Image 1 (cartoon, rainbow, N blue to C red):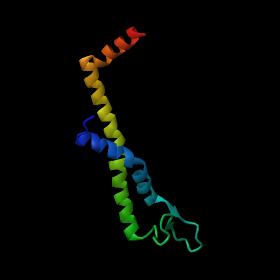
Image 2: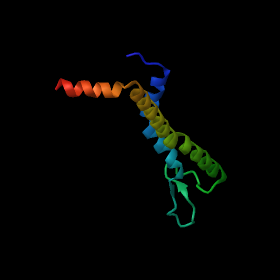
Image 3: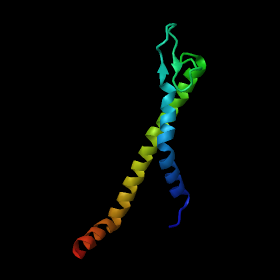
Image 4: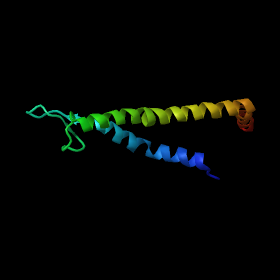
Length: 104
């Protein structure tokens, strides 16, 4: 099987998708069970969730959520519909089913 750049891209996005999505969402996971009313990031308790730096990172994370956890599945969906349209336009799918049903 010959892998071109598209195949490698799809493979890498598929393999990295779960762990990278979790990392992006941990930006919003804050612990607020402190007596002084402060909120700290659960992944790194030295980061105050109400600081200006963290608010900026939350904005970046919002952009990355649209780009990766939403964008990658949307891209896979478009690729699937495109492949389905190609298969049905060539009648390869129907031809394959007809051969399978007649061979048994």
